[in-house]
Length: 304
Ligand code: SAM
Image (cartoon, rainbow, N blue to C red; front, side, top):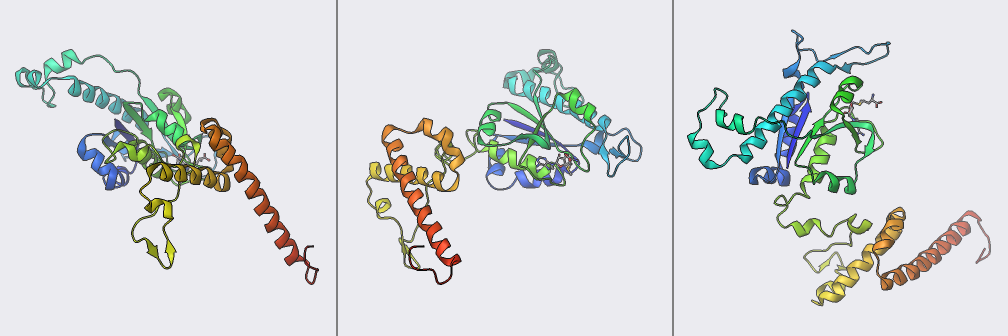
């Protein structure tokens, strides 16, 4: 899977993604991340890429021309990458080289335009990125990401690129680089070959719309706190059942909004467990409310 990031701060994106697990995924060839410096494509002799907004107002707007030309370069690069991956080693040795390193034979074979890639504009106004969206995007071969800055981007270039706006949450950041890095990180985990074992991404928070069960590691006792006995039992079926129930309980307590969809994935036994749990949680809440009321009425007799 290939990410093409259009940005005014390529070094920021590349430093981030070349580290840790995404960095390993890049080295292994499971993903690639190329950053395109929008400033390299401006026709302004002073290297300007932004200007004041029409109609007045504060701040600067990223201009259409440098972004559009940068996008054309990205499309060309995508095509080159596709050609390179289609080419067999035999083709390479026989074909004459162009001055840019690509062969004439390769250009003749791969001169067609690839399908339009999905273009994502990082924007607080967009569809909010979540695990389901990540799974959808992980199926793409190429993703083009545009990072905005200042007051944002000239609307016309977004329309021309048919860009989808994507937000990483309801808050405003200074630029789209961090959102792009967040998305690359999350999507890459779903690409085979990025994580050590793909199973590690299979049972996780948001899988089946449930929150993940608690995790423990050595030692068995830490500051008088013991690891739950069932995890030491070696009884895999019991461990699985305990983990599943913990996931259901955590979801009910921490993210009850997820349960509406999660119930569709629960077995009959799990639904019964959830009903009992709801009763237990409701009773706990009643007890807590009663305790709070007691604290609010000083000197009140017990039970009020
Ligand atoms: N004036 C814009 C508005 O009110 O919608 C906000 C511009 S913001 C200061 C600058 C850039 O940061 C945006 O163009 C976008 O690329 C990025 N950005 C800020 N918050 C974001 C978020 N929550 N998700 C994705 N991108 C964001």
